[in-house]
Length: 131
Image (cartoon, rainbow, N blue to C red; front, side, top):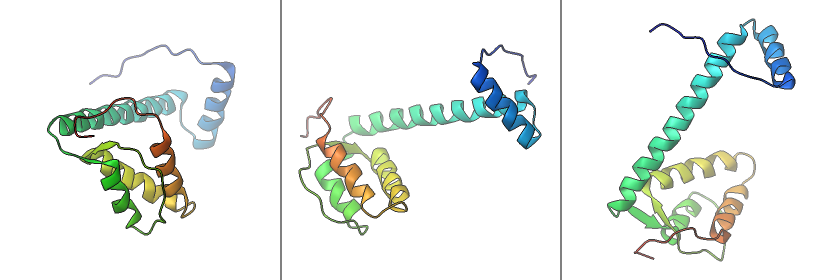
């Protein structure tokens, strides 16, 4: 497929940062922007695909509650918490939350519990029929 030209309007600060990166990496502005746009579009599409997958799982009843999920995460060597609300997690969301918890654990063993507490304290935007 032939590449097509598009116009992008950038602030002077963004353009300066782009030029600096281009100089440091010996790449053209165009190459850097094309790579950045591709990465962003791929990430956004993957995110929306995971939302679609999670919605489908949820509709089929393939989810667990927050109360069921938290002990599984804590069994991965996290300390105990309190005050958990009734949330429902699709299997996709569960896998993603495990990955998030594992990632943040490298910065401090308490961070996954802090994240879980904040999720538990967040207002519920919707509820399932199982709650």
